[in-house]
Length: 165
Ligand SMILES: CC(C)(COP(=O)(O)OP(=O)(O)OC[C@H]1O[C@@H](n2cnc3c(N)ncnc32)[C@H](O)[C@@H]1OP(=O)(O)O)[C@@H](O)C(=O)NCCC(=O)NCCS
Image (cartoon, rainbow, N blue to C red):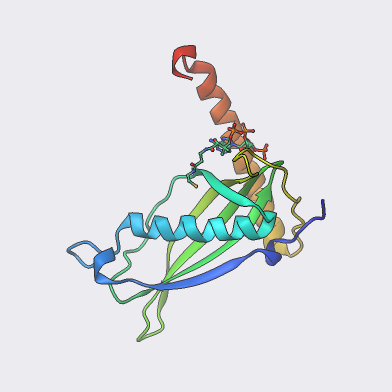
């Protein structure tokens, strides 16, 4: 299978926060932002592997700055790391005031998605070829997270009674 660079599948999208997406204080719901994150990560993963994909995990997310009604939500997403059937996609979310142009980082998220075949089972996906210094740094950081997730899952599974597996 031919290698693909992160650049080949990266996605950038922009959304306007509308009143129905916000709480009474005029701040976008976390779930709305999460939905945008999941959608953009799915598109990146589809573009990388050329298959349908499912999200298998989302790392802990912190909302660093409130995003208000009328502000723009800008999402930049790319594949950081690829396993055999799974991919880690990183999503950087910034908010932008359309009147002043002022921007601020709102959140960063890491998602694991799996390429699936027609039977909805995991299927092999193209390896990743990071090229730029940013891509190489993201790849190395993602490799550490992938290892940490695997170790955590193994430890939790080992402690889970057979009846609950
Ligand atoms: C994703 C799914 C197909 C994986 O099936 P599975 O039987 O666990 O498959 P595997 O054990 O072979 O794991 C497949 C890959 O996912 C990875 N994976 C599985 N569980 C994981 C988890 N909790 N976190 C991170 N990675 C995980 C495995 O490490 C493996 O990666 P690799 O092939 O790159 O080494 C299955 O769990 C599923 O359908 N889940 C529901 C997905 C869903 O409905 N999402 C919401 C809508 S998109």
